[in-house]
Image (cartoon, rainbow, N blue to C red; front, side):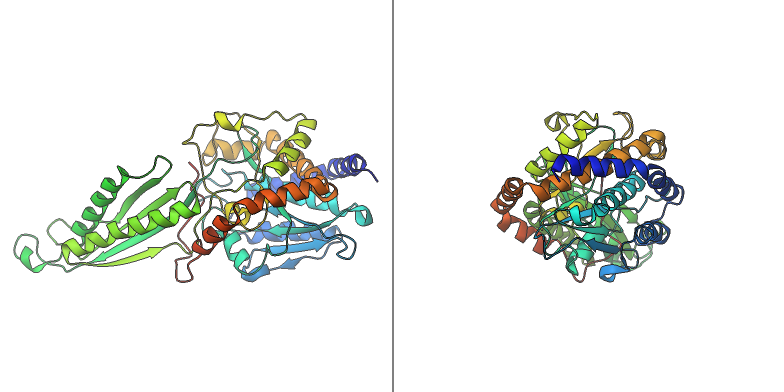
Amino acid sequence: MQVHELKQNVIDTIDSMASDLINVSQDIHARPELAFEEFYAADRLCTMVEDNGLEVTRKAYGLETAFVSSFGDPNKHDCEVAIISEYDALPGIGHACGHNIIAAAGLGATLALSRLNSKLPGRVRYLGTPAEEKGGGKEYMAQKGAFDGLDAAMMVHPAGVNLLTMPSLAMTEVNVIYHGKNAHAAGSPHEGINALDALVSAYQSLAQLRQHIKSSERIHGIFTDAGQAPNIVPDRAAGTFYVRASDGTELADLKKRVENCLQAGALATGCTAEINWAKVDYLEIKNSWDMAEAYRQNAEALGREFFPIDMIPTNAAGSTDMGNVSHRVPSIHPMIACAPPEVVIHNPEFAHYAGSESGDLAVLDGAKSMAMTALDFMTDAELRQKTKDSFAETGDASKKSVESAWRENGLAHLGGCGCS
């Protein structure tokens, strides 16, 4: 069967299951769950996979709400593509990042490819990945081998415009707690060690550092504990900061400079500093442009028009743990419009559109575009080779970034997608 026939097959299949896919998206949208707690969403997706005759491993790779399902004959084909679903929501504003769309689109692409049965020209690994909004679930899964042996990986993310990729930065989070000594601020201040002074000194050092970092780098944060009463020398003060850079290598260097500023606050005041970095750094997306071009052609065939990526403002960048995947295996992370261009993700109005008819259309078009792109990749040896060669060009840098993106002793509750 020719590739255009296979593509028409998956389109027809997705159309035939459109109501089921939309119901999945709407159900997940109506029951937002936070990172690592997506029990309903994971079960809803797994049940759909099982109902369509596929085996699925729940609680995969050491995470309660992760799953994996694989199909395709390994003896006939040596190409394996991952389709990825995300499904966690945001505190207070639900699916204002549209992960219900990501979940259902990934499900639709997977089920459509599975219906090809023996005509499927490769293998598919369908991965349910929790905790993108906070915690970096994909990196946890990667540490357990979830992305090993893959030739390509893809997901689609809702937005206000159609884009070939999401402009992104590498980012991490750090929490600092300064410990000093209480004293009466008027009666015996000389007996105190002021933890707030340590935090203020560190903040000022970071402000000075910001004058001498690259325009692509960012440091910003807040005080989360500044003392209990004005007449008591604070014995504890705390702050949380985000650190961003254009890539994982530059992020690793910037983190060292930030830590020096935090240590300086303690040194200047006599306090002790408890500095806790996130367990997971979010790496920038290393986009596979050849595969993204195949996606563009498939999406355009469905009537999608793409906004030029070079016209996106340089400050309109976010972060995603899909970046961590993209440094391990050639990947794409296109954006699919479900809202007007002026409505940005991570705001309550976007949550409305994620559950609207335009969100439903994004589910179906996203599923079709990914399924067709997976077929292009599986059937086009030249595309696979170009993708592999391009990925290898920056392989050493990716290896270093991946190695620095995981801290065994880091804090799991720190770190997040940090969309702009």
